[in-house]
Length: 547
Image 1 (cartoon, rainbow, N blue to C red):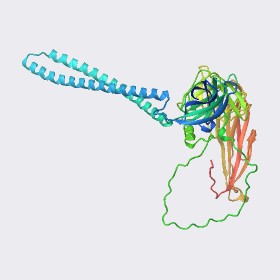
Image 2: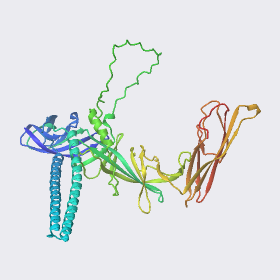
Image 3: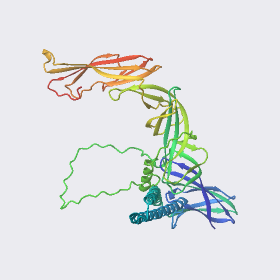
Image 4: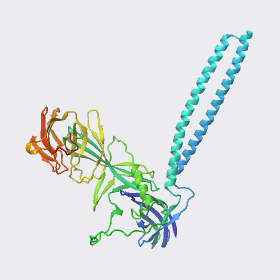
């Protein structure tokens, strides 16, 4: 017995590339035996080898197999495409009506101009014969002037409406071309063959992997300097163009990458060293043919995902947009599933197949935070305030865009955007919040002395340099300030660098002469950091990058 089962999408798991969709349908079988249940209208952008079926039914019911076949339609069955075509037809009619109204107004303007010319000749003849008065001419001129202004204003308004309507029409046409080109009118049917021992209702859950779906995280962070904390809002941008809308589904986001699961060999390949052999000369060709670039398929990327699907997924990631939101985002339940994290979105979600990003809330975390100032005057002026929150969210923070807001009396102030790297639990992340003018930094050269050497060192040029950095805390609280600077590093054996004096000694110094001072500045305190060094080189050696 063959039955068409009415199904609806109940659960969707979205991966960084691809997704798993579960449909549920119920059918009534009226007799024992084998039956074929058809799930119709499935999109083409799925892995036909990924069909899995489970379910329930009368005692003794068995699932025998899951097969698939193609459907053919004259037009795509999506309601969104039909609605889009209706809107395009309405807009085309609106543009046509506006053009007709503009023609009528143009005819009225032409009639008014003709009336004015004829009336002017008649008035001139009447004034010459004494049958007309000058007031008649004044009234005619006033009437024609008012009508001319009215008609001109009406045509300008019609032109504005037509331009706006034409732009909307062009947008809808391009949208229709994109959607029609992204999906074929053909669909798939999954056939679930079952065997029952009697009549009754059978419920089947059919799952399959789809292409054209993806998600990636984004973050909003609100830094509260006074409270010493950061409120981190974790969100997910979900994009899908699978050919079927997800309406009121239980949505799960997973960090698993099915295509990234590989089998390692027992041993790595041997590492051979050999003597270089020059290539054998090739015989000359009679005529070299120019090479032409060709497109090469990248092969499967997600359980058989073809290169066009992978390219489409990458394009969708690049088209991801960012939207500001003031409402607190809903939280998701975070689970650990093997090496992957799973975020179960609460309630039911709608994600249409439009290729646009849809923002879903994962959670908001209050992270303890410490603040400090970074000063690198050799690179950038001023002292940069940075926050160092610790990831106490209980989950690994995935890489994603990070938008930083600074809490203030008048509201949150947007500071800038950066990128959050993968941050493990209880690890620290760094947020730069811009320059704070209340902590001043001034760097200056205070000494430059050149010597030609003494009698025993003729031909040696010695340059002594001294620098000073002045730091001042104009805030009303003690601030931690980190100063970073440098001394030159010689890249020639005849150039020598000799440190002379550090006041105070740097907290750390690298082999590449990178200097770091860490300090606590009390309110109103000013501190000077000074260092001197000598550069020695032969006088006939042209040393680059000398100040």
